[in-house]
Length: 100
Image (cartoon, rainbow, N blue to C red; front, side, top):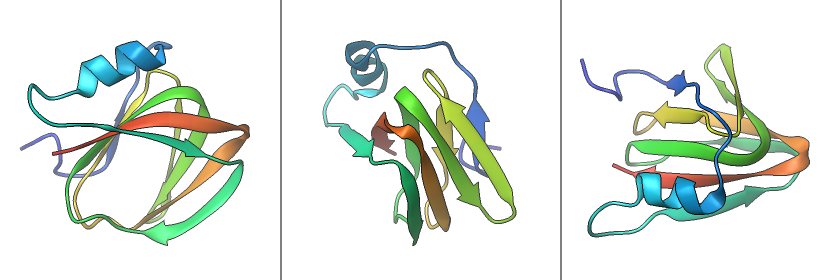
C-alpha cells in the first residue's frame, strides 16, 4: 500500500504559506501555489499524483460520492487520474500543490 492508493486527507494544524512551501518543496524541483476563488470548480483530473496542502481558507474536494472538507494544515493525497471537483469557501482558498 502506498500513500496514493486512494484519495485521503491527513488532518493537520494551521500552517503559514512559507512553512507549507518548505514542507512540500523537493530537494530539486518546485511546488505550485494555487488560489481558488469562492464557489465550485468543474471536474477534472491530473496525470500525476498530487499532494495539496491547505494554507488559508477552506475547500471541499468532491471525489466520486465522497466529499473531503479541508482547512489550513490539512493535506489531500490525490492519486493520478482521479476525477475531482472542488468548492472553495466564501473567502477563497490558498494551497500548495506538489506533484509526485
